Image 1 (cartoon, one colour):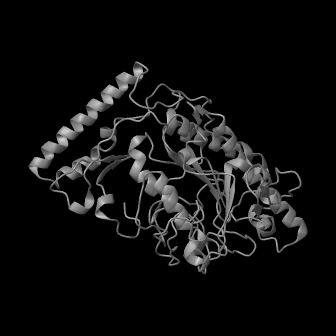
Image 2 (cartoon, rainbow, N blue to C red):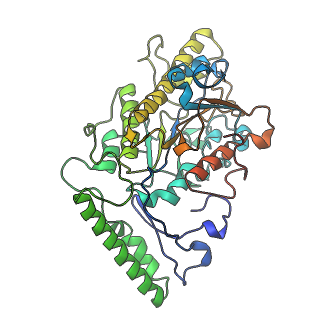
Image 3 (tube, one colour):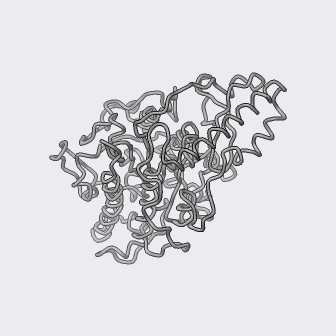
Length: 450
C-alpha cells in the first residue's frame, strides 16, 4: 500500500484483495521485486494477539480544562477528563504532540483532519488527499489474520456538502485506506454486527478467502509466467486445505494456538434502523468494537464519536441547552457556553471510560482484553474556539501486551518541534503491532519515553 513515501524493499508485499480481506502472496519470480517479500514461517502462538483501537472526538477541549499531573492513583486530571478519574492507573495522558502540516494549514477545520496520517490535507477543491492513516497501514499488514482487516465505525453520516470550498468528506473521515480514499465508515450498528458475526438469518456471512479475492487473482494470472501460475495454483490449494482444516477444528472446538474467549456474540443483533438516541448509538458502537476484538474478528478498530464541524446536538445532557456541538465549541469564551462545552468534553471522555471498563472485565487467560490492547483517544483540534492544532489532546489506555506503562503523564510542549511529532506516536504504536516502518508522515523518530 502506498503511504506517500517509499518503503524499504524488505517491508513490501504483494496482496490479493477482496471485500474485507487481503491475502499475502508467496514469492513469485515474475512479479516485480519491489512488490513482494519472501514469506516468514511462524508457529501458532498461545498468547493473545495485540489489538489497536482509535476513538476520535471532534473540536478538541476547553483549553483551561486540559491538564494532568502526578502519576498512578494519585494522578490529578483537569475537568475535561474527569470521567477518567477511576481509570487513572490505566491511562497515559499525553500533552504537546501535533502535526506540523495541520498547525500550518489555512483551513481551520478540514485542513487539520490528518490526525492519523500527518500528511498535508489538499486544499485544492479538485484533489482529495490526506495520506493513508496509520490504522489502515496496520490493517493492510496484519489484517490477513482476521475476518475483517479493520473495523471503521462512526455515529454521524458522511456529509456531502462543501465547507470553505472543500469537501466535507475530510470532516467525516479520520481513517483513510489510501492517500485519496477514506476507509468505509459504518454508522448502522446492525450492519457492523453483520460484518462481524452474521445477520441472524442463518446465512453464512464469512466467505472463503479465495472466493473473496477471486477477481483480483484472475487479473494477476495474466501478468505472471507459466511457472508462477503453477506455484500460485499450489498456493491456492494449500489455502483451501487450511480453510477446511480450520473449519473441521472449529467444529471439534479445537484449533492450534490461542483461541478467542468468545465464539458467539454475547449481545443481540441491533435493530436495522439507525438509533435516534445519541448515547445509545455510541454505546452500541463501542460494544461492537469490544465484540470484534473479543471474537478476534478484527484487531484494528477506529470509531468517530462525531464528525468535525459536527451537527450533533447535546441537549440530552443535563444543563446543555439545544445548541449544536459546533456552536458550543465556538463559544467566544462566554461562561455559559464554556460550561456547556465542558459537559460535552466530559461526555466524550465518559465514552472512552466505558470502553476501558468493558475491556478490563473480559479475561483472556491470566490477562484481560484491556491488557492485550492499545487504545488512543484524541481529537484533531486542541481549542475548538481558536481552531488551534499545535497541541493535540491525546490519551492512551491499555497495556499493549505488556509494552506500555500506564498511570503516567507525558509532557512534550517544551521538547522542541522535532520531539513533538504526532507521527512519532504512530510509529511507536505501529512497532508494537508488528508493523515497522522507516518513516511515517513527517518523521522517522519514535516517541521518546513511551
